[in-house]
Amino acid sequence: MADNGKTARSGGRESLRKVSISRIKKEMSDVFYLSDDLVISALTADKNTTADYPTSIDGFTAIIMMAGEATVSIDMQNYSIKPNTIVFFNPDSIIRTVKCSSNAAAYLLAFSKSFVNEIQIDLSTSLPVYMRFGKAPVLEVTPQDVDEIRQLFQLIKTMLRSDKERYRH
Image 1 (tube, rainbow, N blue to C red):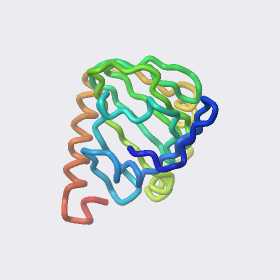
Image 2 (image 1 turned 135 degrees about the horizontal axis):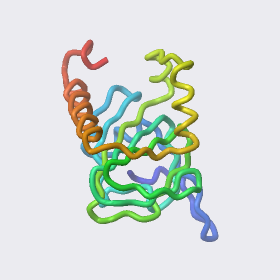
Image 3 (image 1 turned 45 degrees about the vertical axis):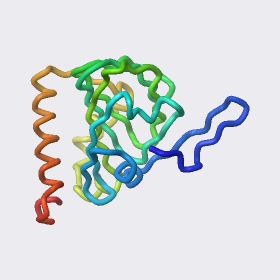
């Protein structure tokens, strides 16, 4: 993603780069999206944009690591990410890739706060999950879980490619 001028360097210090769902869909390749509310994309080490400066995404984000390894800083705490790991970012979390292997590959799913409101998730059941990932954003899952998630992503991508608007929503 190209710099939009909101990132500045002064005296060796870096400022935070804010990224919207809309910007992700416009600037990343291999992106599937639903308006400015939902985006799915493949990530690779050569297209890593959070290594140069800290980033904050204006929405909820999940990254499913498929290959390689990375060290990611989330709100100034480092986490080791390897295959079969899911990382969750709350809106406005500060993210930075500290280290990334050349073969790193992952899927990214990001959705806006308004999308969450629109689909009317029952907060009484989702609040404990939200709180859990705020404290421990990395979840190790089985290869079978990752395979099922990959299948869901493929299904969502197929639906997002559909020209039938009712299926897309």
